[in-house]
Image 1 (cartoon, rainbow, N blue to C red):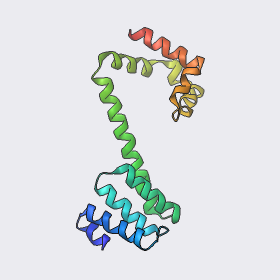
Image 2 (cartoon, helix red, strand yellow; image 1 turned 120 degrees about the vertical axis):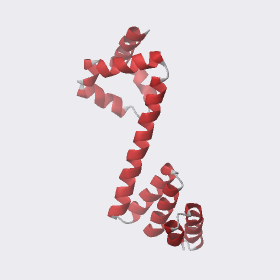
Image 3 (cartoon, rainbow, N blue to C red; image 1 turned 45 degrees about the vertical axis):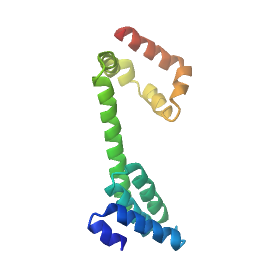
Length: 146
């Protein structure tokens, strides 16, 4: 039934139906059910939730379609995040200057070890405040802008 709802683009009905199936049948290890849930949520533009469902489906069975959807959703989420950052910078002239100073600083752009350090701090950005090299770069950027 859920697949019919999906084909008709009744995404909410598909989601509700597949959730009933998963919960009532105690079939939490059915990769197809999780894939249908992922497709339903994606159709509802709930990308993060869809990604979770596709990850669960892929964990249960390594199907190519699940991997394709995981990559597609990750790309879309990353693009949305980049667009949001651009909007923040473009609406504030000082932030725009700060962004430009980052993008033209060869110490940042050409230093692979510095870039790796920044990437490793993504999950806990406040740790960057403890790093003297990062703080030095940030101070130099702020001096250029303000």
